[in-house]
Length: 457
Ligand code: URP
Ligand code: ZN
Ligand code: ZN
Image (cartoon, rainbow, N blue to C red):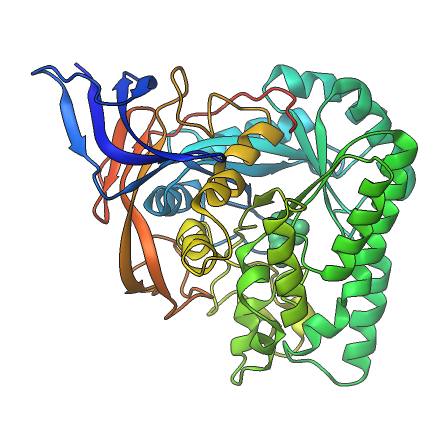
């Protein structure tokens, strides 16, 4: 008794071909032309549809508690939203607390996600407290399936210093994992925020002014010199600027391995969003901030020419009413982050594939395959091939607006309100189970934890 998906166009990073897929249990058993069907098989006719491997969002913050407020989405609502958009694996950030072990953070995050999440999940480990004990713990992280780490160069309560970064990268070179870095110069941010407030600029319009492109580019440049000294590859999360991309180019021309992620908000919007009246600009306050048109164009170019390997969401949702409005009198108190896990594939399809900017193969690469490779779960995830998990999205064309009213994300707005999307999932399979069909979640909470190995491209 198998599931057979017939006549769809199976997309990979290198080609799209009409093929059938045979699913047995949790795995893809066969991919090929005119696969035989028996009376016991369940058949889906995907003629006219693209078929993608389940998408992977490698940058989310679900159920994140900063000590004052908790994100609007937890793993339950975030996982449902993921599946509704065709994302079958999310990689969130288990975050170490000062004075605590990374192992404690891992089990805290497991408890947040277990038996609640509708898509599969894994964790990067965010290192907040770099000390001898943390250092000793690193190898253990790999034993529990954590092969990627994250550090912040901004946010006073989270950031590590340059010596700590260097030591971490030296250790990572030996262990073979990858460190993702939030690149903004924290000292400069603090100073520029203070300047804005002193000048009486308290509205969301001051947010991008307090975190200009130079703040990102300086941090990227510093990271890449430190990574060069440590002789270790690095991953730059949420790249937002042309200036930052230029620093990456320089390092690569010297032979360094640098993986780069950007997000839909940096590809689709520009900093005019912050000038909206009635505090509406707060809906777009994230760090780094949304940039200028020329940055947008440089990032699309970077995707097209392979300089940017992945598009993730940095999904970090806060309600407009009751959370974002904590900063009504002071933009620096607006909780940073945007929702997006539900709409990333639809947005990239609409603004990337349908405009002719990128191919559907490139969409597969940046939303699924590269994420699985870089973060060490390929070919279990990120590809439609015999032996891989049967995480499959049957994709259909459509023409409909994104609305907060219709979303599965548990947040009172979407930054993409009213945008007309031209494609969306029709069926989503998670490890062989049909979990979503025609707008309806069929089976929630089937997600499991995915162990990962050191990865790379
Ligand atoms: O504004 C953002 N991006 N919030 C989430 C945390 C981070 O910096 O990635
Ligand atoms: Zn960040
Ligand atoms: Zn983030």
